[in-house]
Image (spheres, rainbow, N blue to C red):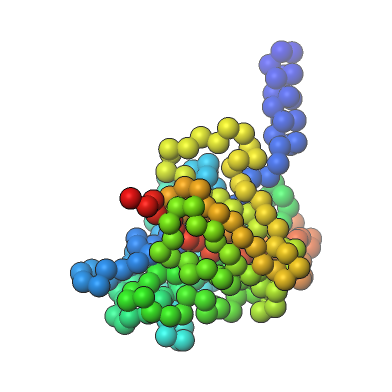
Length: 254
């Protein structure tokens, strides 16, 4: 009876606990390339919980992966290669930059079924890599949901404030919810659940701001409801969570 009661209590706690934030990581080997030397950028993709360092969810092959540079989009989907993260699947790719300018790498993942929440998740994600301090860091990729940076998303000191506009179909999304997480390197243990995911809201113009208190990679995820449901595994209509994500990196001033 004691074990049964303990198990029932655990199930109850899990059922009542808030859903943890999902982030699609798109992390380059460098966000600023040196003027001399290796100009190959290695990009790692994983669907996980960055602040908690897991668990990792298995990714299906992304629908689209590419780079926007010099006003042109190059399809890199064929360069993606699966990589094992424990017993889960992520992806990786490499790209050699041959011209100065900002390179916006982006991914449209295959829809992910989140059984615990009974919905599909599609997180359109991007990250900017600079070579030669060129322009283009604020150019939109054209995702259905996207964060337009109002602050150059590289060359940021720890403590800098990142600002952006949440856009849906190219138009500002008033009062959109934005979740923020730091990609934990194991040096920080959140004292309680509210510290894991920072939650902010855009204003009436779709703009938001957040000051990043620690060096490393920060993910900003603007979350909106999809316009149309998708058929779930049981054949019934299910909600769709559409996310527009951007990753930025901060560095300690020394």
